[in-house]
Image (cartoon, rainbow, N blue to C red; front, side):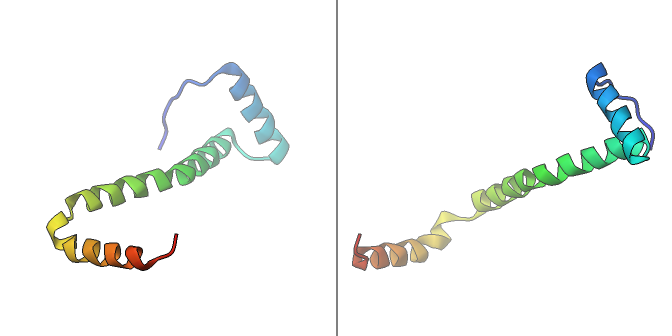
Length: 78
């Protein structure tokens, strides 16, 4: 897919230099950089989904787990 984006001149020049030095296209450089950025931030999305799922769990159904955990913690030496 083709798209147009605005980037600062300095970043464009660095991208151009890297493309020439590594014999890749600017599109490849930008695409790889964006893929790397998205991979680093995918953990944020996983956490959001996990938090959403946990928010949907009925607290009543976990009352046994809470009571059991409290009993175990009472026996633990801190």
